[in-house]
Image (cartoon, rainbow, N blue to C red; front, side, top):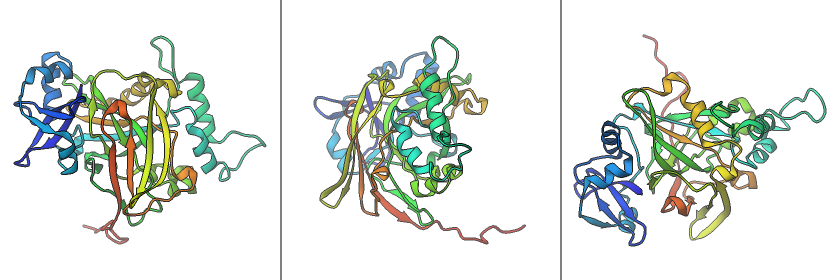
Length: 335
C-alpha cells in the first residue's frame, strides 16, 4: 500500500491511499495523520495496511494536482517535531566507500604505505560482517544524527542551506519510517525515498567534521510504502537547472546492493534505550553510493533535486535555496 499525507481544502492534514493505476488518492475517513493511523494500528494489533483498509473513505482526489499545488506533506511526522528523530547510517552500500575514500584519503596521515583510510576500513567491516547469519548482530555501521522533525522539508518545498554552509548536495536514499509503541517496541511503518542532503565540502576538510556536515535539512516522500521491499531497487538521481538536466545518474539500493542488512542497521540504531522512547517517531536514512559531488558537480540556489525510485512511487523533487542562519558570534547571552 502507498500512503501520503496532504492538506485538504481547509488546510487540515489528511491521509490518503494512492491508486498506482488511476493515480487517484482515496482519502481515509476519521484519521488526521499517519501518526494517528499507526497509533491505532499498534493499539489494535494490526498492520498499518490493515488499519488503513478499515478506515473507509470514498472521496477521490487527483494525485498530480495535489503534488502540483504543493499540498503533499512528508508521509510521517510527529505532532511535536522535537519527538521526531532524524538519523542515518553511512558506508552501507556496495561502492559507497569509493567517493568517501577519495574525499578523505589525502587528508589522513598514514602510519604505513598502503594503510586503509578509516572510511575504507569501516566499509570493509560491513562487507565482512554487515549481513549476519542467525540472531547475532553484525558489524556496527557508521551512524549520524541529522536533527529533529523541524528539518524535514515537504515534497516540492525548498531545501534550505544555511549561509555558513560550504556546500549543499543531494544524497538519494532509502528511508525507514518508525513509531515506537507504548511498550518501547519500534514498529517499522514502511519505507520512503529521501534526499539526505549534506555539506560535502565541510566533510571533505576533515572526517571529524562529518557530524557538522549532516546537520542540514532533508526531504522524505512523497509516499510511504508499507510492508517489505524488493531486494534490488533501482532509481535515478538528477539535478535540474532551469529547463535543462545538469546532472543525472542511476542509483541502486535495497539489500541486494548493500553490505549491511536492514535488520542489522535497525538493530544498531534501536539497541540504544534512548531510541526506544514510547510515542517517538524515527526517520532513518540507510545510505547511498551515488553523489553528484563525487562527479565534481556543485548545486546552486534554484537548482531542483529530483530523486526517482519507481518502486516507492512518485519522484521526490526539492529546489535548493540559501537561508540566513540568524545567529552570529556573541549571540549567546550570560544570565
